[in-house]
Figure: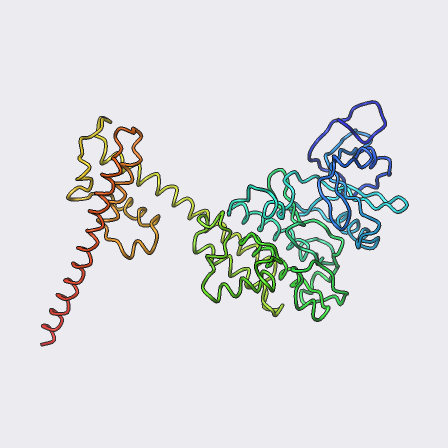
Length: 448
């Protein structure tokens, strides 16, 4: 393995390691060695700022410790100048948090400005939303959002230093994912320092950031506050939910306006990423959308703090995990019990139940199973179907899912049984009408 040292001894290599809180100044020859003279084969990212290389660099000459790292070489012609370079060095040399990317060190040599970070093997949130073919699950996305929110909350209020920090360039490409898929906020070149004990304090500054992610209040007034980060995080939440970029061809005014209009029109469910739409419980979706809406409030004072955002997102994740556990438990319990109860005898042999009488005259599902059955069925179906129909359809499904193909019904049999179940609906409606008429007559009789 190539290492950044001219010594003959081979140091040990680690993908993650704890180092001194103060980042190290690297010599340019160490950077050249770590990147094999900036070999194109080692490029793992590029943008207007320059290129990022994957390398291996010695962080402690005494112990010969080597880490896998990401080496960001700033283009001297890019917009990210010396002031932003030194701002990032200063910020990250003082900050250590599990949800902030770690700065190992830096190098400034003639016109070269180079930053050395801990390597993030799973790339960025942007990669998984818009570039890779295997998008994250809904629960994975929630956990990433929670991690990023914790990182921002630490910057705003929990740094342990006299001043808080406004990131000013929060976006999906600046949320990186480590080997455990933990989110790490990165890129502090535009960050600003504010008094930590004065939440309403603002910094008047030239508007900077990324188009589509800038707080409109900050854009209009030039006043930068922590709530500016909160607004931008709301944009990130929508991007995570919809898997559309902050500025996308499918909408004219940006994702925030598009989502607001969709919610007003009652189309919230339609904007959810189609790859995970079936994963998101309705309650979680509403709660998540509410958090994003609060973050995107036009009035900064009405926006939550990042600490509140963390709590709300943790609550949403808890709701989703409970929902998933209920579905998993219900599925195993219901179908397992139905197969055992109706298709097998006590000694495990196949019963001789006739397909035409799949539904016993007196269905005897346990109350617990019955409740679970209702929990996994679509709400509209619950409103329209009778209990007898619901149970009958489940029995048909179980028979179709028999482990032995010879014991499965033919499609003709399935068709006949479904037609019989459909007719139950007609009788169910007629019965309800008769019951309603009888109730009306009894009420009139009592009044007389």
